[in-house]
Image (cartoon, rainbow, N blue to C red; front, side, top):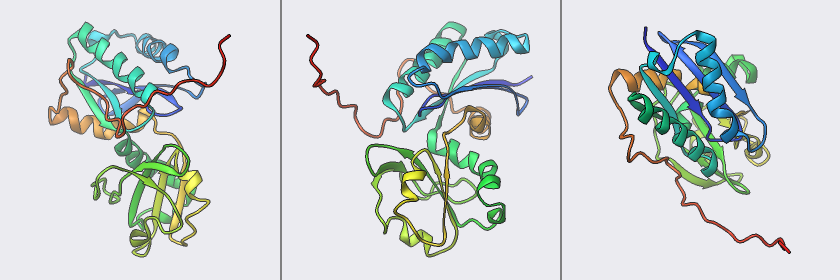
Amino acid sequence: MERILLIETSTALCSTALAENGVITSYRESSAPKAHASLTAVFIQEMLAERGITLDGCNAICVSKGPGSYTGLRVGVSTAKGLCFGSGKPLLAVGTLDTLVAQAAAELLTVNPDLTGNLRFIIPMIDARRMEVYSAVFSPDGTQITETTPVIVDENSFAEYLEQGPVLFIGDGAGKCADVIKHPNAHFCQCHPKASSMLSPAIAAYKEKRFEDVAYFEPFYLKEFVATVSKKKLW
């Protein structure tokens, strides 16, 4: 039995999943604000108990590596590394954009079923501040075409890809882009990456033995975290 524990905390949605022999057998999620730290470990414990196994029964632990929320990524990675250190299990990491691309097939059915098989590009988007998103361009088969970069979206963004055919913009940054990108080939799916959608890239990483160094692994923040001083008076 091949079991992989999946942890996705890169955005406002906190989710975990357990995959057994390539099938999701248990899943938890919550969109409660700022609850990642209190829920992630609880979700994992619940799933293992539900399946009647312990962490020793898992083959690997996979975590979302970003880009995404600084705090969310820290929670997920810290939890995964702690579990790996305690159990001796290998650590896998999946990019947040890769998860969204894997999720696109299922989400597409709710956006526009007619696009199935007709998409030219998939552009996953993680919401950043104002009109900025963390994004990259992928082909429908999951091949990444451009580097992951921060993009300030305007009406001309991704025009060269939209001119070539239907494009699906997916992620928690897609909604705000729909207000400015009006090309007829643009289709939008506002959603958060889910742990269950990490399944395919996680299995690929496991089979190829792309294990991370548990001691030195760090999330892919894309931008450095900048601490600010609160303007609120404390006394």
